[in-house]
Image (cartoon, rainbow, N blue to C red):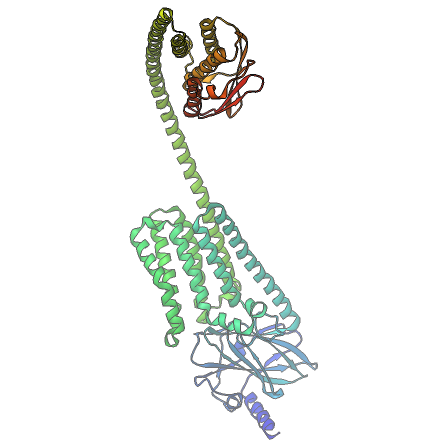
Length: 614
């Protein structure tokens, strides 16, 4: 009880030295810092009880915002007094206008009230982006409040505002809306460029998309959205402690984008320097971040990379690189924004007072400019493609004309050569046919002089075989198409020779439904000759009967059938026949086919071979 009484006395004593800010129901907003006093605790250990004992150590302040840089080695105490000039109770909201400050304590000594806030201590019930504290004043009451602020890892920026409740929540709703528009714009631009990447496979788009998503992640922390909507306490603290990696991530892929987009290989020195820097960049950032003594310098390598990218862009612009103009414009926006933000952080000029969403506007503007640049790249590539296509078509037309002339000349030469070859081939066939006819005539004369029947039959078989080959050359001499032979004409000539040789009453019936290839014609002719000869010799003892020869084909095979209505054959004699042996050899070796013999109602021989057989 005595302790509480002592604190009250100290509070009243301290109040005497303060100029109270008078407020009433009409007070909608006040920046409290110009009405507050500041004390810097370099020991970072003072408690509220010790602070209450300090009377003259607090210094008057006239600045609207206080910026102390990254993780300063001191704590900041803010003291201000509010006086209710009305006869009614007042309820207001005190806003600490910076979501990144890691540790904030709000004290109301008169009511013995303490509330802890900050990015490391986000209250579960809070749904505002910045920490807030509810205060109440009785009619004509004055109260002195203390804010204890310190920052670990992040910047320590102090800005304290007083709001009327309804005004604050209206402002907060508007703030949420604008931040939602900002993130939606960045996300849409990211998805847009990602879809273009999948369409074009240009890696520049992928690098830029990764850079945009890095910016989105960082800004969610910077704006406080991630603190209240996305992360648990442990995850939030981890992300804040390593926020420099998100910045480095975005700049790293922005550098890869610049390298690819400006086609930096054409500037060999800059390409080599940037490549080396990008290799060592992750190691330096990691080393400085995790080394406690050097952690305050962790962003220097990211800053150096940004400066060098700006230098490269200026160089490419001077080299009249069309794409560099867009990037340079984007860099100028970022440079201007960064400069204004730096001036604001030094409390020289508060740009947020006039452009509260400057950072968001600059990021969206840069993203739009770079997206336009990427779209222009597609148009440029399309124009280059069209020019290349036109040149190629012109070259193709020229080549086609040249080719036509060459083909025409070659065609004339080939026709001339082909005509000569056809004449030579006809002459060759004519001479072969004449030579074979001479041999046939000699054999016929020899047959007429012989008396031995067996010898006559052997010579007659030889005569017919040679005639079969002779007739083929005779057909070749009279037909233009030498790739296929008219099988009907060929088999008719063979049949007539057989009929003339035997003078029997046997009839040969031809049913020829297909031509045959030249390379198969001799084999087929010899086969038909042997099968007809065998039928004449063995099938008809009475020298009277019918022989049916049929040739047809389908898409894959040829079929040759020779059938007689004779008496059949003796298997022992017929299997050792020279004629049948020759037929089997021709079918298997020359045609690559199969041979089947049926003896029901005479003899039927069916031969089958493929179209491509030789």
